[in-house]
Amino acid sequence: MAKVCPDCQSPLVRKPGEADHYCLNEECPGRKRAALIYFASRSGMDIDGLGDRMVEDLMKLGYLKTIPDIYKLKEHRAALMEIEGLGEKSVNNLLSAIEESKKNGLAQLLTALGIRLVGGKSAKELVKKYHSLSEISQAAVSDLLEIKDVGEATAKSIAEYFGANALLISELIKLGIDPVVEKTENASNILEGMTIVLTGKLETMTRDQATLLIEKHGGTTSSSVSKNTSFVLAGSDAGSKKTTAEKLHVKIISEEEFKKLIGE
Image (cartoon, rainbow, N blue to C red; front, side, top):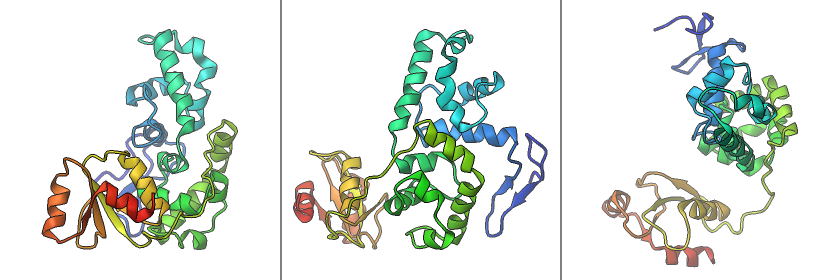
């Protein structure tokens, strides 16, 4: 096991209760590179054209140092077109993809920031209570602990991140990366406490739309079927998840039955 960071030679530290070792050097070029790559990746803001190699090249040329720099690349449009392998079309497409990413939701942005212990699931839970970056940045650990799927280590990690990155968050907001979740009450609580699994092709909605409806009515979704699954929403060509539900005697309902259940 390596004891020092391969990029900056700082000692690697393992936090209590965790298996991974971390470089704590805020100026580590490896950490900065990894943060930029993850932010732009499909798991993050999904910025087409800003892959690993492009990020590394733009860092070497001095155009990228921090996440907000991504949204300042449009200021260097002419210079970018002079880079070998790029041209007007490629640069325009890249800048368009960057602008388009501003439309991503708050949960996706939180995931993209790479906050330790915060994944897509916990990010979705966070935005149910906090509806903007500003609100989350002011949240106390004790308040964060009230959120489902947020334990003490995650709550502390969130608070520490926003405390240490106040300038970065402020800059993102000024650059127009400030998605706000509309404050609405659940349409009903009919699915409250239920865990629902989606499988197969739905006829009148996408899986993302079905997931939003489930959450809107107080339920949550899971990617796998277990004895704790409340029911499986099955469309056409349902596969192994439906088979597993049948074996476990988990209720299976159709799209039509689901819509009647929630009153849609």
